[in-house]
Length: 98
Length: 276
Image (cartoon, rainbow over all chains, first blue to last red; front, side, top):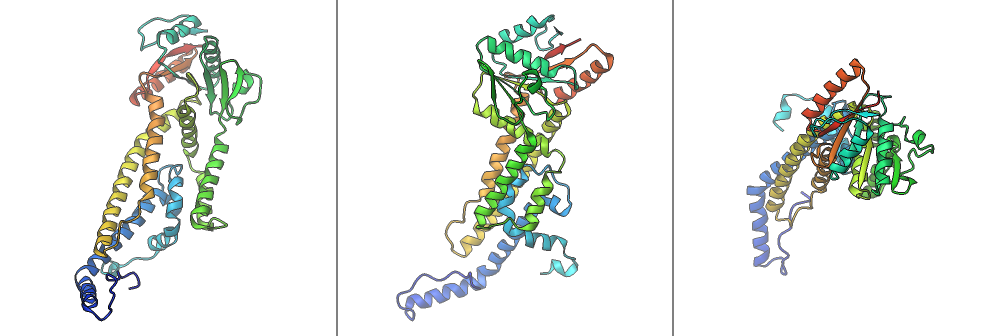
């Protein structure tokens, strides 16, 4: 993954530090990677829930008067497209698995 | 001009001098509102009260948010959408142009989006949404009360005389304010939860601090604005709301109903003023 953390900078790539660095990366991959992915996925779902509760009227879901939602709109701009796609696509049982 | 019994004062009032007396007795009542059905004399009372207070050496702003407001007529000059206009010494009058306020506000949002993402144009679907918001119900009420908060927060005057639009607006806003407050409470919680997940992910990836969530700051700001607006309407010490009535049964019945509704939202009723 491109956003994988890099180990601590090692002066000698082949040295003891390098070995520890690799070991740390492997340990991260085995133990924490899934959890990180889960945390980020949950966060992304919440982000979509947030947009739904503030700007749901974009999809025809009546929400409170949008006067104050407009203040939040600039921050949500990058997510609007994916949010709409996710909300409007057809869903089936397998969604729950992946 | 006859003022009737002021429930809060337990005193029977008669004659315009009695209205003056309530201001002498309660100098802390800075926010004075006149409400009631259309055409009963809200603007007359607002303007007369403002005039009288100005004569007493107080700095007074009398303002209205009604697009068909008559302050321009009563002071015989066009003040609509021009900010506070000085009428005589100590007296300023202002007619808020809610439509323009909404347009300017939408432009600010557009500008912010362009600045944040270095865009020349706001993306089409976002632009559609911004445009659609103007047509939403209650957008106007929110805009109106937001500009009232601006005016009052600046604190340039001793007295603010608010020539209200027909009662519905104020009640609608007050009921909205309560819902808004809860709504903001909920989404603030959601944002905070999101932040926790973000921090967990960042810790596991051994990243440094996550960026500050600007949305949380905005939510705080929105909550403050809404609370200030409803505080202005419900401050038991500083606010006095006067119903303008005429001695007609239908008007009196209607006002009684409105008074009950206002009481439910904790609006302090200063009294009733009759033009009949």
